Length: 585
Image (cartoon, rainbow, N blue to C red; front, side):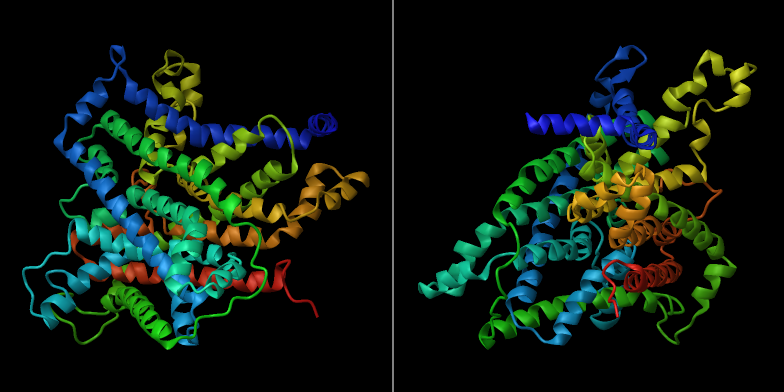
């Protein structure tokens, strides 16, 4: 009874605050227009034909042998990459948390975990082709192998595993640190071997987290567009098939139906991860370890594990190092000396690199603060406020995490190319009408092909990451701090800006740079939306890689990595001097 009265009082306070009500209304409109609406349009296009509601569109695409093959290929790649990435991530996490390793090995692990963050998701495809392709440095010039091919199923699996396993490593590392060592030591005291302790104590506690890591990697794998496009060859996946259905067959309605199929797969896996595995993880691994863990120092264990993980980490690092080196060879596959910087010069003098970096940088720079602020506002409403639409805001903002970029791109094409709800074809917007002069492309039709739609995509794609970070930070702030400000007469805007936001500056700055890095390295969502008016770095890299111009692609990628790495360094500096966790003298 008291709880319901308190909730009712909170709702009345909320409705009496016009700033907060307006903020909620704007958020609901934004999430509906740019997340729910594109997905709803895909469903309508997939089930609505000239004769009304029909399933003929699905029958047509399912009758295509290439589409059926693409579904099978996508699931095969997703499951195998998920298993391999989870296993590799577990191995690295276990060695770092449980085994005493040297500083060099620890530094390698940290570098491996950082590289995928500051680089485009497809640079390893370039390295794989340059090292192990038909004209590869290793295969052709060192081993004399001429008939090999890295393209296809195994090429995609290897590249995606090397790209995504650091994500599993970071997830499982945190979970392993939270396991109370007294549980494992009790089993050891009873005579169990280390393997028995791992199999009977550690692994069962970690099982929900392993499932979580697998599903995250599986979703990332099947939603990946760039790697299958560059190294897949004739091995089609759903993401590449959808892209070719639009750009090659010009079948937007068929592409929409294909996108719905891919969306259904990711939503099913996301639902399992979100509502089943996360609840299991919370119920099994709670709090922090009661004391520090005694690290394994037995050389029969430490030496082989350290060598194995260090060798794997070095291989990944060498793959990334090949990107800048590949940009300095005169002609890849034919001439490897002397080194030259002509490709870096041609990026700016011949291939409009200055425009590409300017457009990418400016669009990402605009999207980053919008994303960070929206994330903090959504987090604040979810954690600190009680109102009926709270569940809707939280669910829809997180939904973008499960939507593959290619699906979102198709949704924006179908949703805005002809105006909102295809309003450009309505009689009131017909040529010569009064509304036509105001909205010549229909309601919001001018978004399509503009910079605004690219910024919106960047915001939507990065919103879930910032929101989750903000929710975690806000749950650590006692509500009495904000209530004191309200008691002194401050409204919700001033409380948020002067009390709440300063307390979560670390999360805000982290979300700012994460949004910038994710935006400037994005490709799957924007490849279908970018127009010749804008040149984006990742699109340029993808185009040159498809043409076989690996030197130019590597030069673009190298400069992009330097930009993103510099952004991360700036974030660390900002966190040190402006964050709430800075050291006080």
